[in-house]
Amino acid sequence: MERKMILSRPASVTLVCFLATTFLLATPSRSRAQKDLPEVTVATAVSVLAFAAVWVAEQLKYFEEEGVRAKITVAGGGSPCLAAVVGRSVNFCASSSEGLILARLEGAPLVAIQAHNRAITLGITVRKEIVDKSRLTRESPLAERLKLLTQLGTIGATSPGAVSEQIFKFLVLKAGGNPDRLKFAYLGGAELPAALMNNIIDTFAQSPPGPETTEAQGKGYVLIALSRGEMPELRDYPYEVLMARPDFAEKNPQLARAISRGGALFYSNPQAARAALRAHRFSNLQRMNDAVFELSLSLIKDAMPKWGDMTEEGWQKVLNFSIGAGILKEPSKAPSAKEGILWTNKYVGKGP
Image (tube, rainbow, N blue to C red; front, side, top):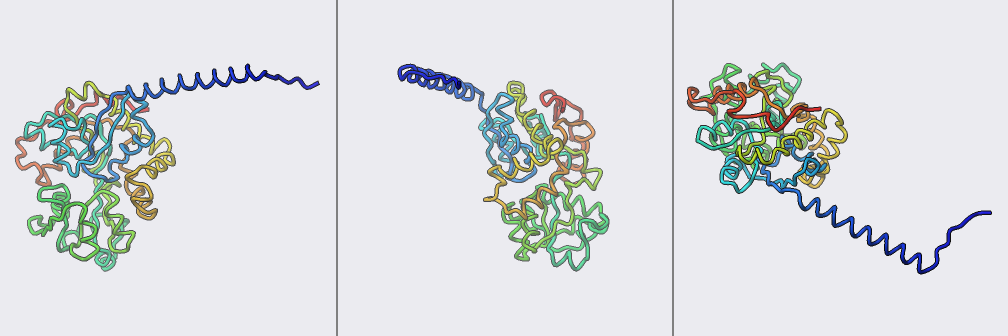
């Protein structure tokens, strides 16, 4: 005979009330635990895929898992990002390592505690008509592609002295050209892709997805993707780094590990990293179409570090580039690349 448990109406009502009370008591405790996490603000210099590790960490709630709530904002440039941290209006700045060198020379009390990239992520984009005429592709010998840069007309850059300008001086000099003969138009970051597609400029340098947008529309072509690490002096190079005032970094070390986990996922589980990046508000379908996203991801993924720790050798490359590109005007004033001056691995720990 089948045995059935039958509750009387009063008993069933009592059970439902007990379960409901248990749920209501448990839910606030979880909410309180979430609410009680310390909150910090992180500003990225701009909204580009060089910060993919930050976006993945936010999307997958790695910050919360590490015990902190992070509010991610966009500063609108490296200078305002650094200034916001110095002025304490934000807690962390994610921006270029070259900018940190200049900030420190000006007396800003900042230190890098984590690296999101292991190569410069800029893509050197040239008008498609010029590339087709040259019969060059991304797989052509690097020397031939660099030589083409010495033959171009107007170069688009964000502002005088920005890395989008200095990278061309560095590459043209490497190709045997004269950087003093280069002609620049300073247009701001958002305007560069449109300027190339409208034949106002011949080339520009930017991290994905701007260059890839022009390629997807058949107007431009990413001739040199520095994120692929073809140039030894720009490889194993901490490009975008997380910076903070030392006192605040000491109190809030969790971000360094959370962002490192975001970058490491591109190696341990590429599909999960891709899905998280695609779902993020800065790189979802509403922000970029499939063609742009897939091309951008293919060109940026090699720049993701297996972990966010840094080395003296890597920072020496940052200093060498800054001097060679003219970013650091007085080489004699260059700081040391040794740990504890510009950077530290004190908070990032070791990877998996």
